[in-house]
Length: 595
Picture 1 (cartoon, rainbow, N blue to C red):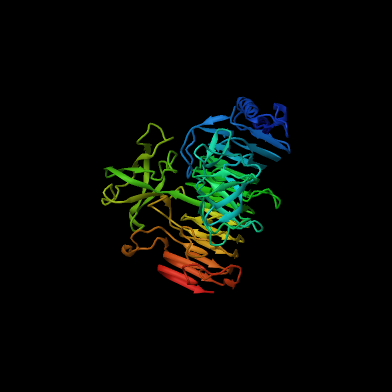
Picture 2 (tube, rainbow, N blue to C red):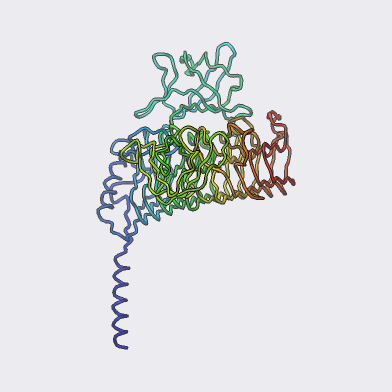
């Protein structure tokens, strides 16, 4: 009995010591000179604080970084400089990073309502190789966005368009008579853009992407810009036009190789790429994450240059709930993996695979133990048998960062037909996530509402898609262009409200819900791309409010159900879509339609 008491006492002391060793270290940014509403450059001060945190933290500690409500300005000078290869973005390096968080565990970054404002061309926040971290309660914005917003003043068929830049736009007429915007360390000559209705903030009906040729521009006597070579009858006086370039250097928030990340009550008002880009991460929760305007009185009409949120090669669960996504230039959410193209067969167990798209390469693709499958690019049919990776190493570089090709060794012999003489892709099945997209509002954006390309369970429910301009929901798959995997096997789309999608034509806009894999040789296909079982894709209990005909388009699907949905026709716009069918199917089997 006495021995038991001694052992219990020793155990208690050990447990107390363990608990005592696991501290919560709280860092108030004000203690490091980072005062809210100061004109100081916070980049240098942030770096000093982060150095202290990294020097003091011990294994097992929890870290809290606490801001105060107000504005904090971050400039390129003094910012972290990083080589990051970011999926679906321009692979130009190095990047200037406002807040670089790397190798963190149990970190909470609490903005307490702070507004983080960035200057120049920066990546606002990165979280790399970190575990169990929370980012919350702040907003991200730039003082001088790279998009130039203008208002159309007059439009004459012979004399062209006269426009007035928004007050915050820094611009000039160049020596070769081109309108260009500029800022700290950057200049953009805009080649195209999107027109918005001034009163509703919706994209102009049947407008889509428009060119904006400002060659020959000059200032008028009353202070406007005249562009005699810009001719476009769609742009009536009063239209708000947002001019864009082709650059997509960085997202607002970049997550890479993280585990268990939560983003809560965050607003991204502008980013030159995606609002959020996550790659090779496991388990991400977005709660009240918003890519949005700054309220009803915000003079801007746009948010991000591309998708609001984008998930590339992730696994575990992606949960996005109670979000607001508006004014962005692409999807509210895009979830996919990336096919590597087979470019060489070294032996029966070894292939060389290559990242193909110029905006997706240079980062981890897979790991030993991952399960893979192979696909024929022409027909998008699975070929051969599933296999596992035993080793994967960069092939065209000494390290993964910046590599486009990988030497991949497999557990079992690779089927003989898979080699560089044909067009074959490799899909990583291990790095594919479940998705829950629920309670979100998507409105007044370009191109699409949501895009899903994952074989695992995907639930899309209780969302409102309000004037998404293009298709509201797209299920894709492409081993020929973007090389974004993959087939959807288990999708539930229910209890959503769709309000006047398809007001403009973009890629994949065949219906409000478009199941549209890229299949160059559909006539030669023997199998099916999406689905695989009865009720693989179910669309039920939704409300479709539409001015036009097409509701559902599907290509190469096995197991599709459309039931208990309500379709309400309105007269807000004139019907114009080329597809005059409520339901249009190409190579679809086991389909059930019950409105």
